[in-house]
Length: 274
Image (tube, rainbow, N blue to C red; front, side, top):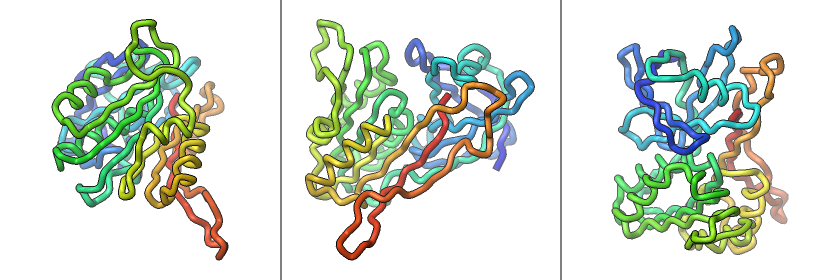
């Protein structure tokens, strides 16, 4: 359903990431689940261009989406240059099944890299509000500390909820960085996630990292039914090549074939992020 929205606040998260806090202007609230996304319809140079951006708010909070600028990105560049408080446009949705399990006692483990934190932050906040004693782990890969999106928000959550474990991994850290460093491989990600026998796993990052982490987890005995993935891809960087009807879709990918030839599947949602 198409909904008109107005930007009521712009929050600078990092040098290249901003959060747009949105107010629906038709008087009807947008009911969303943490982890879902909105399809944003921007008028860029007279062309309506659609992009899917994850909702970065907890359930019940103000509607908000976070946009990271991509080099040469048509829409992300437009947002960072032109969208300010008072800007009005339309959105579609919410959509997506990258959401929390119905059982609020299930332990959760999240792997995020870069802008992959955008759906995850609201999921963690929602899960903790539902069950403050819930066991939750987050492994979050960034290049530098200055590029950690929601760093203060995550730090405050970790301080307030002792059973939330947040592990930052920086590939280009400053010399004084006290945390994990280096390239995050699938095996290392799986080890840091420390998935238990009942843990539900959520992955959101580069396809290669998610593939490698999935392989490491499944080889360690984690059933693919307990792994959910959110995949972002780079959209065309010219208006002429934009195809709004291909902004996002959902599909199941085969992971492994059992002796009975039944295909085991995990779910992946793909969306453009430029």
